[in-house]
Length: 325
Length: 255
Image (tube, rainbow over all chains, first blue to last red; front, side, top):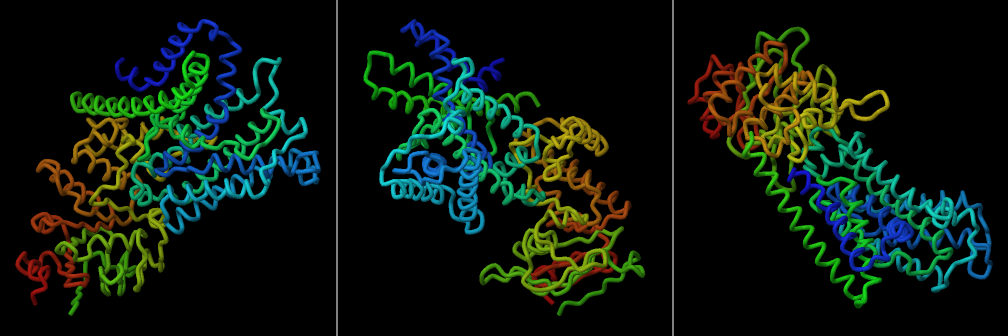
């Protein structure tokens, strides 16, 4: 019982946080606001999935927010009907989406090339990618905002079923379910745990470590592009700073949800709780009569608390194991 | 300097299962293995001894595809092979039980047994139920029935971990099995079990290469003894035609 509670601590904290906010501000208790939190969590959630794939393999990808910004911008440039800043090509949205995903995959390939073939630390490689892509995005647009996007392009991020349930929410929740399935029931998912847990052992056992790592980074890049598509649709426009600074939230959600920077540990459902918790705190604090600066402070404390909690859980589990052989 | 007499009863017209000629490996300027040649046969336990840094582990890693040799050739089952990865060597029937055991602490026993070769269902998802069942059966057959296939490996004792590592190598019907210090850090009872197991494997036709620091174990188990000294082959002896003094001298490079 205690074990169950500790392992699902993030959901319990989420529940109590929500109750606390609603108690202070009863107007928060509305379906519309809950859905709003989910909708705003969708972008972060999609990026977090990519990060978890990389984290499980014992690596990480700092670059996904820039992949988001870059692919959103290039996609909008290709698809925009406005010839002033757009390419004027007015490519069909379906093609543009495929190209965006391909760009995301390409970013993942480049990251992996440096990390796997040249054995550069993933932190350095993806940090460089984060900066470089952000720079390219500025150069490319001259700080123009891209709008006049065709409706079929923006539907994924902008359309709500019955005017209530956004497609992006359904997409992001189903992505979490699918990726949890991938982790639990496919050889790819299980191999990631083995690689993150003990890379030498995984290699010696015949796991294609490089190929699995490449796949994780390609998925992370493609999820960045997918998040770009959703965000462009929700905003109906693409600004140059799209996604900027999200890397911190991505890490926060992953760590709060039990992801380990050492690799080999964690699930998708924990980080989903982390994403929602961050969303609830942001929304909740924004309606409280306090300075918005508190949001970051609370997040920081939350991350530290989460790390301590997970460590305590580990210590307890160790005790349980050794006391009951 | 490297004298070889490799006549064994298993030496038939087919020759040896594994033939290694002039195998060499450098790590930067350190010569880890220098022109080593030997053969390993089915139905035989080849003891491999040598001081620390003599090249025993390097030899295993070269034959199993973890490292690529700088020179030399490896002939396995009458075919010249150049394994790029351990995956290739495992596919051909070469299994290794590593000294550091090469297990993933974060995963459960069954998953370590099937590491790198997870069984799949028809829809390509992993067949957890079958793997747990087969792991349980395997552990039972090795007299390790008390070890749960769903126990997390990180919480097992040294002996239990060793058992998992051995089970993994056995499940895949190895033709050539390297055991790097399989008895290190084990209790006496457990050592007895491992040695008995080595004998049983030999009798089923497997070629076992058994690395140990303990010459008593080597003499009680091995049919032939191969000695490495500073990366070079110091000698190969029939167990019945040598004694501990000679082997120790070979290990120390005394001639």
